[in-house]
Length: 68
Ligand SMILES: [Cu+2]
Image 1 (cartoon, protein in one colour):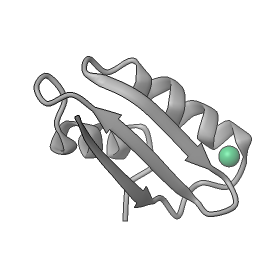
Image 2 (image 1 turned 180 degrees about the vertical axis):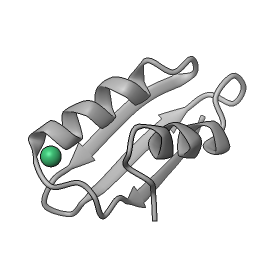
Image 3 (image 1 turned 45 degrees about the horizontal axis):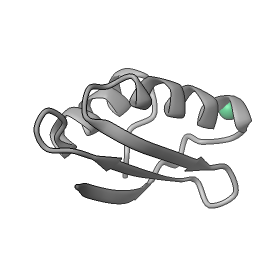
Image 4 (image 1 turned 90 degrees about the vertical axis):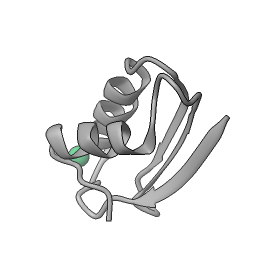
């Protein structure tokens, strides 16, 4: 199990964190997603394979919330 916490400056409200949690949790291999509005961070846990940090970072970019 791999995990990472990243800063996502574009997080502004509960809708942002909801979108991120929903989209990331749909990715194969992702086991946990916790997004926090006040710290603008997301903690993701995944099994590798099938998921990888590269795929997760690509998806974040695609949905408009690139990780810093
Ligand atoms: Cu928002």
